[in-house]
Image (cartoon, rainbow, N blue to C red; front, side):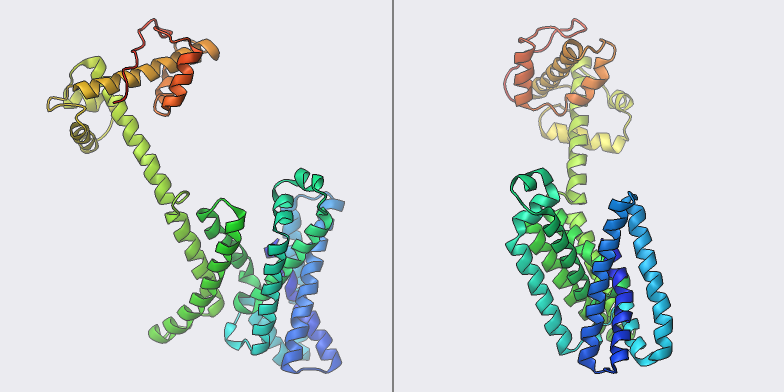
Length: 391
């Protein structure tokens, strides 16, 4: 939606310039007002056309988005060629809105953007519950008596205003990125919409500030021409990337660490089961049974020695035997459950139980024990070890 509305704003700017040219008013303040008024009206028109195509003509949403985006951009290109003939000087200013040019912002821009940003913030603050209900639970919103049509129209107006705020800084082409990147960064940091709004706003503000700083100082220091708009977007994308890596709960680094810790624990438990069945094994036998590199296996065995689960000859210690028997118990409980309640054959339950045994919590174990009436044998008629307390 942001991509469509930002591109739909482009012909609106040129239409506003046409209107200004027709009135003979080419003052700077009037130019700013007419350009942004035209952009705002055409953004709304783009949203209305998009909704009409989806509802009236039953067109797929992705196809409708592409159609409206390309059509309005094409109209803007046609109008710009005509405006280039009528007023090359004015058209040069319009071209700065394609990729943004914060350096030519005036006090009027600042006051206008501040007013629009304040209006958006106040609306979200006052109607947050309605916005949340309509976005995530339409049935609940209807029960509460919220006006879906009114809220949808208001959200369309807000997105259009947000697009207008960013056009001077990052431009038509890059505006969608500035709508999305701060939200991505915030989404990795929180699961609550009430926190996501201010976090995204802070990320957007920092991106705008740091993008300008990088554009100025890096250009001076390295003698490079780094445009402000793209630098702002690159900074926002960098925030999103860092957030996706380092977020405390959903970051890729944390998730990868949890995944590796789980695999490490699962492999240790499989080795404990293997040694429990074999009583004693050589390093080569353990490696051959589990198909892992000798260095990784050596590190696992060293860790198990440190935990006092095995001794120097790779035999189980009393602590290791107790843990191994507990894993075997979980495995055979899972096999019995799969066989008794899901109807799986005795030949198939083993592989499924191999996966399940590593994720069974003590609470689930208690539930399985009660459900299966404290069983003593698994489907293969093997004894299920008794629970002997914690490791």
